[in-house]
Length: 416
Ligand code: HEM
Ligand code: HEM
Image (cartoon, rainbow, N blue to C red; front, side, top):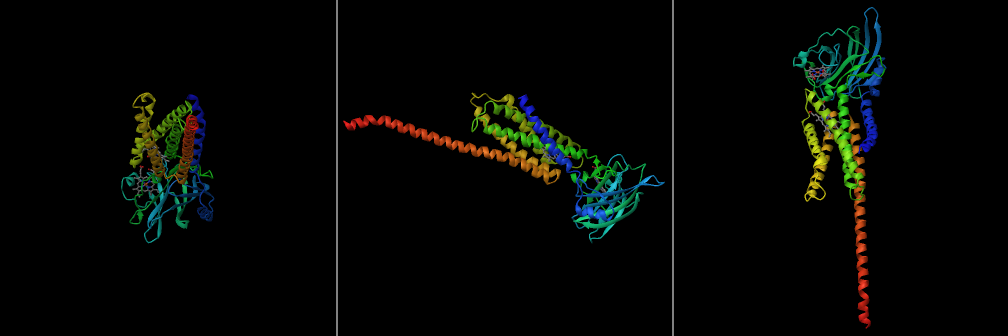
């Protein structure tokens, strides 16, 4: 069994790395053509799509400002705002981390009559605790304006002068946000969904791709998703397929089926439990949201799969009378578990809002496993009917032979 697990670990590692590279690559995409054109009009050529809120970001560094030891940067920021009123905001944080509190923000507000205004704000701890956000000087803005729309995306342009002792342009903490409430013409509290709290990063403005770090939490979420899809969503179903089709009928692969079944279920359980534990720790450390349904299903999955794993030790012998009832319960729980896993994976994908790649990736995985199971099921029934037909033919043949063996004496009697 150890060998089998080693054999399985290579494709598994490749699969994990491929999925991870897809998710991580999705985090550093080039910006859209429409936004790029707007940036070019402002003589800006470096541009990237930000991870959340459909936001895009373009920048141009003008180098050191002589005598002042500061860097001048042109910024074009864009985000979609589908409501009649609301705001889009972008800012830099001179503190240690890219976070809202401490950010010097530039916010463009859209009023219900469709007009726009742009102002600067100092976001303090008090704002997070509920105080009104009012405009204030932030000392770094040279000019600011609301710009054209591009493909439903609202944009604003700012020229900043960043003092080098406070801001390091190779490691600049920047944040962005979209809100729907305004009060007295100023931005009001924004939602705190995953997309709204993941909108921070540390960017290197000297790199033309805008290389960024500081998304540790969102990477951990992606890793949680990938590991769960592999453990619960792939290995466990493969184990179920092996047990259903390779145990007795249509293929009898003794004892290979058993070793493979246990290998898949054990690895799936261990990998899945690791993903589950990462989920629990992420859930534990998020202060502003809890995903109740996702967590309840996750706990059920862990409890049910642990019970299934107890089969290792607590399985009745083949000769025991109640073995058939145990089989029924083990199968029933196995299929139930499978259904809950599918539901929870889709729930996780919805929470993650990581894009359609996740959904279609998992649907592809399900379709692949489903096609194999379907093919084997059809083959099982075809073989079953062929065997039955053969048995019937044999039975008929035996009967005819029996009749023929019985006939001569009768004929003899008639002949007599
Ligand atoms: C209008 C008043 C605002 C209120 C009441 C508010 C409130 C909040 C709250 C409660 C959180 C979750 C806090 C946490 O996890 O510690 C948050 C997070 C965040 N906010 Fe705001 N916010 C406001 C304005 C803004 C503005 C103008 C921006 C940016 C331009 C912004 C950017 C962010 C970002 C990036 C986060 C996630 C990172 C973090 O938690 O620090 N917020 N906000
Ligand atoms: C059957 C497999 C899965 C299990 C057992 C599981 C388990 C969990 C658990 C226990 C939590 C903590 C919930 C809370 O306390 O709020 C969680 C959170 C989460 N899960 Fe899953 N999960 C699974 C699949 C997925 C998938 C496939 C994805 C995404 C593709 C995903 C994305 C998330 C996200 C985004 C969170 C929130 C993390 C945070 O609070 O920052 N999960 N998961």
